[in-house]
Amino acid sequence: MKSIIMTGALLAGLAVMLGAFGAHALKARVSTEDLTIFETAVKYHMYHALGLILIGFLGFHYPSKTIQLPAWIMMSGILIFSGSLYVLVLSGIRWLGAITPIGGIAFIISWLLLSYNLFKS
Image (cartoon, rainbow, N blue to C red; front, side, top):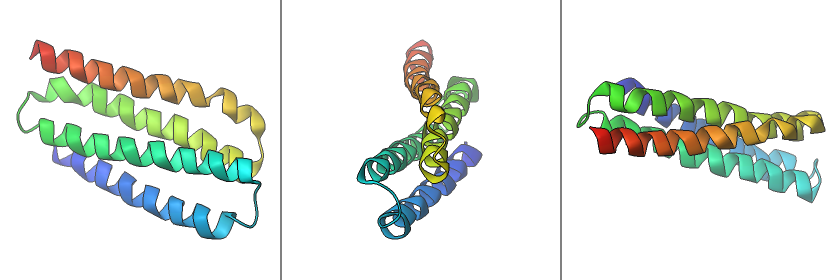
């Protein structure tokens, strides 16, 4: 539980750093469209980092098996969804946009699985 909270907090801090990088360093270097893509990556990164913190706190009230898999899937979603968008904008490798929905599906699965596990518990 503590490790999930710590991971969420670290990922939230990283989201703030990347958001600042996007707002200050990228603003003059990338297109408006790419800046919007980067901001979307940061938003979902932060939302799900906070989600991990929430899941970690739930772990103090529910068995660890209830929250561990949703937490891992959510971390994977951050890596795949936001990570693919960060790399797409920074590298210009546009085909990475095709990977992004896999991360979105991971987000959906993690929230639904968490809900189901809490219901079962």
